[in-house]
Length: 397
Image 1: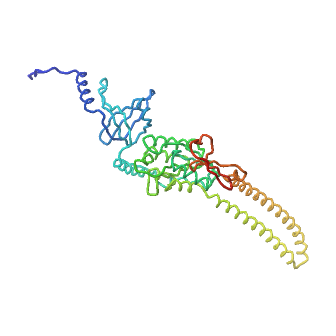
Image 2 (image 1 turned 30 degrees about the horizontal axis):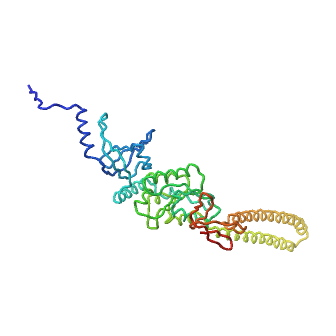
Image 3 (image 1 turned 45 degrees about the horizontal axis):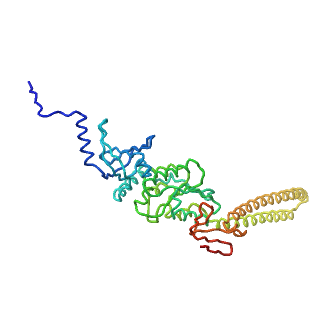
């Protein structure tokens, strides 16, 4: 028979053991930092954010209380590589521990580069980079959607380039952060907005140059998949010529700079004007040539009759030819009139979109810090004003 070993100390209850673990963890893991991938992100009805921070070997439950989430102004999404800071807390009723997060920031460059290469390989294996998925960019867009921050130089470059190259297009801006933890979710919402609304012909996503951390929002998996699923042709222009992002590989077209994206998205209005004029000349030349050809043909046939019988038949045919000739001339003139009207209408539309037309009528354009002030809300009373007429300009301080 086995002997029962006497206990020399009290056996703790589950609650007592959990209290000891709680005291040990909460005392020694205060204000710590940990890095990982955010997953299973959920926002409760009362504003708290629950998510799991994970890596290849483990998972850590995390929570950001509503007040902290409001203070940080964050909008987490699954797949973001982040560093979080906070305290470890043990929730005794469930016998589990979690991290109470008070800080969220982007992960370091080493981890980001690894994440970049891993995601690039993953999406390439799935076929998201294949040319077969690339949609053609429209030649003559009427409306252009831009997803970027309204305060960036990138947006100013895009807008000024579009005003010079293709001023007849309407530009719709979806303001989104282009850097930081909130950037990826906001960029995704902007892409999805244009994709769902179908209210533009082409979409540009863009920001200027920077470090890998600065550009990281465009390397997030959520952004890459939003780009791939976008129903509207999309151009990615992130950073400078040497910078490549995941969104560049997935997009229908990659531009090296924001300015180049505007160039790729539109034709040059001056080239279009020259093309219209050239087509007009060719139409007139071809129409006049066709009429003269049939005139010469009829004249040649009228002189080639050898027999009277044939001559009589050809006389009748000549009358028919004359009738057809008149009908042809009328038809050609009708077509020419329609074509001229269409070309004149298009030319007038191009002229109407000339940004200098109001100046030619005597209006004044107001500038502040090289920005055209189109609305009262854009006016800054503390900044000097440059008033521009057609024949000159004056600066008011």
